[in-house]
Image (tube, rainbow, N blue to C red; front, side):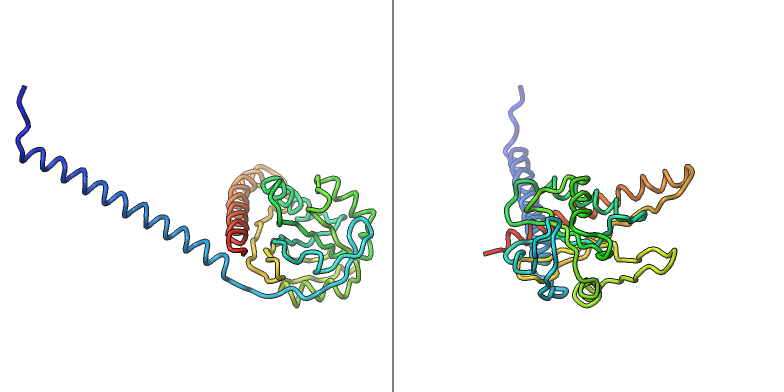
Length: 229
């Protein structure tokens, strides 16, 4: 058996140490990039939710004070919606399931059809999607105040339905921190009701996009929780 020369042994050790150094540099770079990403998600402030006085699905008064200190995700729906609302509520249910058992995180769905969506209807709607009491809250109340919140605070669009025209509203999820500051908007890229094979193909593509959005939202919630004192 031939004994390796000192030169060969030296080269082997050199290659080993170079690989170790390069691997360490890559690992540190990935770690730093991840930290920077989390800090960016935790630092951006896109607006602020002003105080409000609405009513939840149990008929109890509910205000911004009830969300103080809690990270929450808001969306806007209505119970007789035949468009994107069922899909949005399904995605919210997915978020609730993904964060089950995590303290300090809540979900709020605000009706854009409050004259029709009385607490008892919202309560049935909440049960349909498995909303956990105290975790996922559905709100109704003064229509003028709700529309004002949507346009002024959340900076999203909403238009009342006229005749046969449906209510038009934004379909983003909004991430809000414990101080009522808006930290992110997350579009669901909903697929509207269509017919035929083309709709099925589109739905498959859009499903992957929605899952990416949910992953980003979950990551940003984690970053906000990590940044809390």
